[in-house]
Image (cartoon, rainbow, N blue to C red; front, side, top):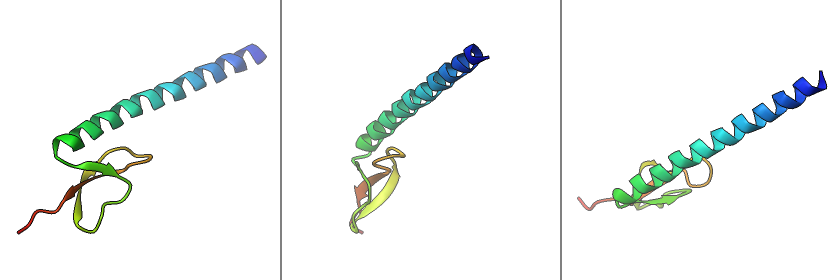
Length: 70
């Protein structure tokens, strides 16, 4: 029975690592998209900026861009 538990824990650890790898790839893609929109990734947008999307879920969740003059 202990052999089955080891295999189960190894498979679980491998799945967790795969989830982290693929979520990091999506974060890099969102950062590139933010740069294309002339924005920057920050934890909080400043008062003269507008949130135009997301960068990453963990550290820098917002893509911020300066508000346009109207």
